[in-house]
Figure (cartoon, helix red, strand yellow):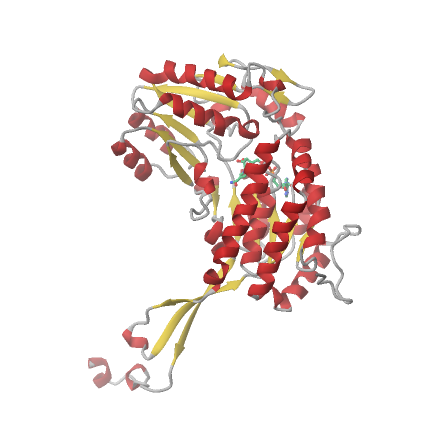
Amino acid sequence: MSYASADSASFDNQDGFSAPQVLAQLRQSFASDRTRTLPWRRAQLSALESLLKHHTDELITALYQDLGKSKTEAWTSEIGFLLTDIKHTLRHLKKWMRPHKVPTPLIAQPGSSAVFYEPLGCVLVIGAWNYPLQLTLAPCIAAIAAGNCVLLKPSELAPATSSLIKKLIPRYLDNTAIAVIEGGKAETTDLLAQSWDHIFYTGGEAVGKIVMQAASQHLTPVTLELGGKSPCLVERSADVEVAARRIVWGKWMNAGQTCVAPDYIIVEECVKDALLKALKKEIRAQYTRQPLQSPDYGKIINRHHFDRLCGYLENQQLYFGGETDPQEHKIGPTIVLDPDADSPIMQEEIFGPLLPVLTTTQISESLDFIRQRAKPLALYLFTNDSKLEQRVIRKVSAGSVCVNDIMMFMTNANLPFGGVGTSGMGQYHGHAGFAQLSHKKSVMIRKFWLDVAVRYAPFSSFKLAI
Ligand code: NAD
């Protein structure tokens, strides 16, 4: 199906890119009202599904080139994740789009009230490099579901995936309503100067502030999917073997470059040795004794981040790992023991394969340590103590909490995903994404009959007494 009309240029080609022109084209498409319809939204989502299915191998290759991702990881955390999200959205979209009736008070009777979900208009999506496909296309799914036009700006730090997105999206989707512009700081700055109806940004805090500042010039609402340090607490009653297996899986997936990876562990002293031994055993089981050679172990995105991560290891006590390959940008799974709270590895988000392990006598005593710091994107707790579980859930603010596992809440499209405080604002996945990129328009419909005079001036004392 082709949507490009004779008088509307498509975005197949980026030569002579002009941000105002790109937005003008999207606005023209939005004004046609076709993106508001259920058939258009469904057709785009199905087309995206076909794109992912037809080009799975190419996408896996691109993700390998950018991040050394294994086939399994590329499938589970990127392509398969997106296909599940599309399937869930297609299944529920008609219901989500229905006006949501709400009660009407006596004073407004006879009348009816409902919330209509209305598309916002033109949405700018700025993707991140660590899951370069998922983090560009999952916001796109939400934008389409909500009936918007969308411009995708994939991360320039994952160039193979970015250029494949640029090549494939116009082939499958309505290319006058869904566009891709590649580029880095310069192109993003131009795009941010335009008056969008929503900006959906995934990445670090520093650029998040730039995005929010640019958006404020047009009073454009933003979704900021940011990061930060996500703690992982291991209490004495936990099954240490299972905890270690799950922590190793979640921490060293994508070589630790995951926004919701556990950033550091706080373990109770009485199970510390058991946990450390179990972690070592699990790292070897999952990535062999030579993890840098393991086909399942990824690489660091570039030299800048490789050097940043190596810098964190200076003057630290290593329990495990520490091997590096500067040529391949690889750093093995590394465990750091009891770093100072004011050392860079405990001050900055690690976003790599280094795992500090801190010790406490009692987990309940370490909750203030977390509460005194920036609100995390994710909080993990391993315990069999249901009282502690409830205490942590209720006492510590975090984007998401997962008890006795790592990252698994991401697999549930019924759970909104997003940060709180400096870990972000706004949420998506499933209905949350649809709602985030819709305006909830309040509508009240009244009747002409029963027009009670008491509400109108002049307000005589008689009326007031009533
Ligand atoms: P980044 O913030 O540097 O880049 C992200 C995007 O911003 C890219 O598309 C880039 O082109 C653009 N950009 C970079 N500099 C810019 C500038 N000066 N002006 C305008 N645009 C600019 O990415 P990063 O900091 O390396 O990403 C890692 C961070 O992202 C981590 O903090 C991680 O936790 C976070 N993250 C969060 C999520 C989430 O879903 N919450 C997912 C992935 C990553």
